[in-house]
Length: 351
Ligand code: PMP
Image (tube, rainbow, N blue to C red; front, side):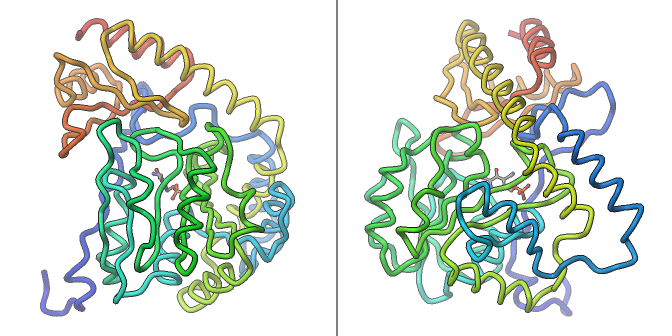
C-alpha cells in the first residue's frame, strides 16, 4: 500500500491467474486451455499479417472480425463487440451496465473474476449460494436490483443450465442487463445467442481461448442488442481505441472461418471428456455432470490438495478447491487422449 495510490487502487483485490509452468514435459491440466493448438490457418494468417502491417495501428472498430463472428451467429456486426480476451469484455460490461447504487447478483461459486470487478468498480454484489447439488437456484436471480451475471456452463462446477431456464431469468429481470458468460458453451448444448433478437437485456460473452485454442492471443467477444454493444464501445473508446491488436484480429478471423477444424477438435475433447469421467468414477471419484472442457470431481477419502501436490511432483498440473461448499474438489482440464492416459497412470500411483 502506498500513500500515492488512488482509492480504487487501494480497494481492489487483484485476480490471481492460474499457475504457469512452462517446462516442456509438464502436462498442463489446470487452466482449461485447449490441448490441440489452433487451426494451422491461424498460424498462416498471423505470419502473413506480421510480415506486412505491424507499423500500422489495427482497426479500432474490428469491423471485419465482427462481421465474421456475426455471420456465424446469424446476427449483424452491430450485435458484436470484440475485446482483448473475454476478461476485458467482462470488465467493460461491468463498467457499461452495472451501477454503484444497485446490487448485482452472481452465483457463489462461479468465475472468481466477478467479485474482483465488483470491488474494483465499487458495484455492490449479492452472492447467491449454489444448491446442494451445485446447480444455480434460479428464482434467487429473479427481480435483481442491478443486474445478473453467471457463467453457462458454470465454472468451476461444469454444470450447464438449460436455455429455457436462462429465459426465465431474462423474463424476471426486464429492466436489468443479464450477462451470460459462455466461455465453455462450445462443449455444451445450446447457446443463449438464439435469444438475442428477443431480449434487449441479454448480453452473451464468449471467448476464443477455449474451443478456438487461442488463449495466448487474447480475443473475446460479446453478442447482444445494438444498444448494449454501443454501451460497450463507448466504454472501450474511453479507455483505449486499440484493445485488439493486428495479429489477434488476423488469427481470430482465421480461427472463426475454419469451422471444420473447430468441429473436429471440439468433438475430440468431448469424446475424451466422456471416457475421462468413466475412468474417474472407476477410481471412486464423484464427478459433476460436465458440459465443458474440464471436470470437477471429489474423492471420498483422498484430499484434493494432496492429490494436486502429488501430481505436480509427477509433472501434471491440476487445480484444487478448498472453499466453503467445494471443500475437497479437483478440477482437471481435458487434454489429449495421451495426456489423460498419462494423468491416470500417475494418479494410479497415488491413489
Ligand atoms: N469466463 C470464464 C467462466 C472463464 O473460466 C474464463 C477463463 N478463465 C474467462 C471468462 C476468461 O477467458 P479469456 O479472458 O481467456 O477470454
